[in-house]
Length: 439
Image 1 (tube, helix red, strand yellow):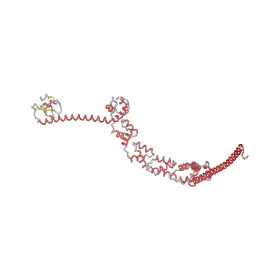
Image 2: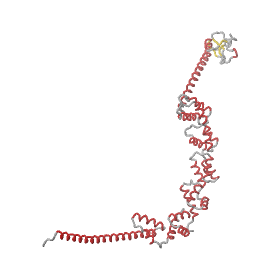
Image 3: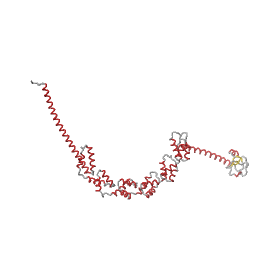
């Protein structure tokens, strides 16, 4: 009777397990409730703190600087992203600023921005719009500062500062562009340009100096100054003041127009004329050039670009098309090797010409020396014999004229003047024949 049956023991065990599970579930529910309640509290607290931070930031912005409603919203949105504020934090904070006078903020911004020395009224309006004030707020602000700023004087000041930044080298065109970009009105722009704040004559001279960094002709320089909106008198005085050497400018320009020195006289003259250089200036710039070698350099380029040897006819045709003269073409063809297609360079041709000239000079020098030796021998023979006043009886001595082909026995024969006395053997050796009159 002390022991229960197996079935009774199992039933009691099951009841105990169920009761324990029930009690455990109650405990778990209690814990979950506590946890969930804590999370809800913390979330609530996070929302409150975020709202407090947002309101404080918005209030600080409004209180310390001029700012538009949209500007505050943008700033708070950036902070919300960085600090992970709840979704409606920014909207809630902006609701707290519902009583803010945004028009007053715009007026404050207009007063602060408008104090800039060179700002125009239109530029001030753009500044307010960039700060995201509404059109109505901007118009109200501009109306509020109306009459406080002298925009005419600011246009003059802005032009003056622009000229100072450029060290006085300011053209009217650039001055106009500067003022227009600063959004001054057309009347203010013209008034500033007509003022004496810029010495336009000095500016024209400086502009002329800058323009002459490029090789310009007189007409080109005058055109550049005219485009810069200087007056005719200012241009004339500026050109006279800088007094450029336009012939030298023409030379400089032709160097840039023909850097390889391979263009013909005709082509270079056309290039200079296109830049409005005058003919005397062009002639002076071209007088020192040897266009034969320009043709040589072009021929070198042409032949080097061909895969096969170019014929002389084809090369001459190309040079003619480039407007080289017949003489220049002939000079090239004289040194061009048609069999190999090789065109010697300038230095090689000059060396060859120099060698030819040296050989020619040597031959001429040898001929001169031979003539001098013959003359000297004749003079020595004449000095050795005293010329008689009567016909010469010594058949061994004869007389030869300075010009002619006969030797004479009488120095007065044929009205000879200052004949030379030589031996008959010398006369015959030199090719003289006997005169039949005196023998």
